[in-house]
Length: 220
Image (cartoon, rainbow, N blue to C red):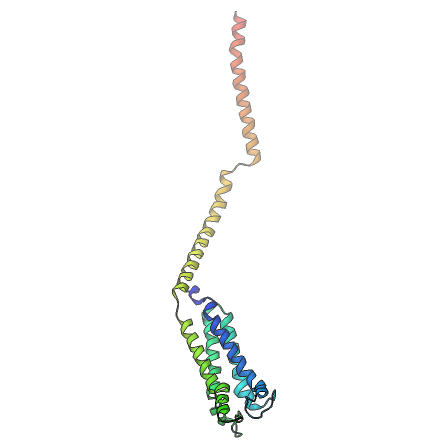
């Protein structure tokens, strides 16, 4: 069961990398966009206010962290947590500007888009609504992939279980071999006594073989 909780890192690497890039875009564009006349008011680079913190920086950090967890994790629950975190950040990008009325009376909290009609539309899409929808979509696809145990994952889990059983069998047989080993072996002292006993037997046999010849010569 534990093996099924593991997932190949490649399963979430591509989606995690994409979420990291989207999170970086959402967090940096309000600060570098004014250089290209692509911004919300205040139209000034690297200027921080409450609207940018709550509606852009925090959700961008959530998306970036979720993508990083997905890209690096080998555990299925951890990778799914990263996907959920990114999805929440994306949803906040999409609806945060609407919910901002709950905590501030200074509306719009995110400022107003600058430029002409086309520029304002692209800014609304690229800063909030469109960015949030894309992030939620990528995170949802990742959750779907991570929630399914693929055939390759099942094969890897079965191979891991077989290896664990083989290791357990080797561990069980090793103590028996260590116990049986000394019973069949002989110590150096035992081998020396056995050699001396064999030598005595051989010398006794040789003396017995010479006695009949000596007695025959005396009788003659």
